[in-house]
Every structure is written in structure tokens, then in C-alpha cells.
Length: 382
Image (cartoon, rainbow, N blue to C red; front, side, top):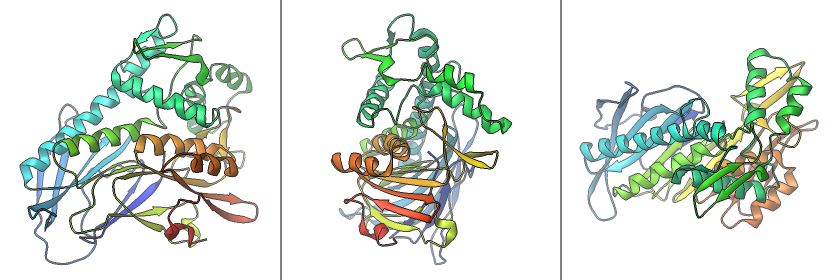
């Protein structure tokens, strides 16, 4: 889910731009000047032979009086840049935790990727229509959550959209609208009701041959949640994980009320300043077409595909979702982008702890909509 979030920490004044798909590969630098001890330590990444960059930014005291230092790490994962910010008592603790978190992301990519032919998801596509497929715990949990969001959104979010995704990926490469007959064939394979889950045996059965699942609208959120949980398990509660447009946020930085998150919405280029939220123990996702789109015959098509029509969404838009976990915000970001605005707001308001902020380009200009629970700091921009 593309989007751009700027993170401004209330304790250090650090501002960091992380647009989805930008291969930055290194940690950010302090945005303001001042005396801060800093150094870089290069750690060799596992397997991929990439470098994991460490930047010590500041020292502070946690609530229990222990001295904590702030660290940042970034690595490419799942077709985007994964970024970790955390507070830890020493370099070794921070680096070991970050390494384990990135290893967890790599493990999940091997499970959920639709680019790797040997991934578990691709094996499911090849074998799942012949017999029930024994799924790993991670894959089963993500699919169960996917089906639940599909049901809640009446198919606006649909994990079986893979055949349509393949056609529109080709369209972005060729600049040509998908062939009508190809669209019809692909649509015949898209329906979340064709996926049968057995919670007792932990198996997945695909009811039609040729089905292909796509976890692009939920996998990064799940990975961010898993990485944050791993950091917290190691005692590093003051942390945040960014996975493209998905953000999983733990306890606030020591001495601060939360992590300040500035959201770049679709109307940012027309003079609207980003709205800023202060968040902790929460998740946020922004879905939009600022980075992934194609123009065909004068029309702009997003990477987000409506499963009911088989056609990518037209025009410029962004949808920001707040919830407790990034798995939920990731999937709902896509679902609420596809649903009519009124239906999307009703769905958000029916779910505990969920809020949404939508920006849409119309013939009469930019329109902004929000659910009742979305923070006033953004709503007031209207």
C-alpha cells in the first residue's frame, strides 16, 4: 500500500521521509542541529549480503531511570524499505534485536511472496486446488484475517485477486489496458468464498484450479506487527516499525507522549500541510496511488484493483486507517479505498478502535472525509 509518512519524534526533533518504494537503505539523519553523539556501525546482513546501517542519535532516560539510546535501522524487504526505530540500553542489545526483526521479515517474505516461485504462497497456488494444503501458522493466520476482512467489506478486499494483479502489473509495464477476455477469465477466479480454511487441520483448499492469492495488501502490515512483537519480547518496548505505508507503533519514546506521525495525503501537492498525529501502541496505514499507477488513454489507474469489476481504481486518492495492529490497517486501507466513501466510513465506525481519513479528487476539487474517531488534528484541516 503506497503512501508516505513523515516521522517526527517529540524527544529528538528527528524528521524522516519514508515514501514507499524508495530504496534509501540507510538510516536517517537528525533534522535539526545540536550536540548529539553519533556514529555509524556497519553490520553484515544475513543471506542477502546487504548492509544494515546503525545510527546512534541520542541518549535519554526511560521511566525506570535506565539510560537508553536511540537507534535506527533500514533494509529492503518485500519490495519496499523496512525501517526500525528503537530505544535500547546498549549497541549490542539494539543490533541483535534489529537483526532478529529483519530476519523475521525475511522469513515472512519467503512465506508470503508471489514473486518467489519457491514461496509457500506459490506452492499453495500450485497444489491447493488438488487437495487441502497444510499451511504454516503464519500463512494460515494471514489468510484467516484476509477472509474476515473480505467478509466485513463484502469482497472489496479479496485475497484471491492475484490473477487480476498479474494483468495490471503487465498493464503498468506496457501502458495498455488489459484485454477484455483476459479480464473476464481472471475475474472468474476471484472470489474469497472459493478459499476453504480448516481451522482444525490448518489446511487451505482452493476450490478452482488456477486461483492465485495475493497478500500485497496485508502481508507488510502483518510483518510489521510481527517485528514489533519480537522487539517487545526482547524488552524493547519503545519502538516503531515502518514497512512502506504500514506503521506498527509500540510504547512512546522515553519522555514523550508518543511518536509524531505526519501523514502526506493525496492533496499534499496542492498546498495542504500534512496532518500530524501523536501515537503509541497503535498502527497506521496509508493507501494511495502517488507511487504506483499507470496512465492509459489519458486516464490514471491506481495499483489498487476493484475485485468486482477487475479494473484498477481511477483518479487520485488516499486512505489512512488507524487501528491497534498493522495487519488490520493494511487490509482495511485497501478495502476502504475501494468501497464508496459512505460505506467505508460506516464499516470503520462499526469496528472497535478503527478510524479512517479519506482524501478524494473529484470534478469539484479535493474532498476530505473522516470517521468520528479520527483525531481532530487531521479533521481540522478540512
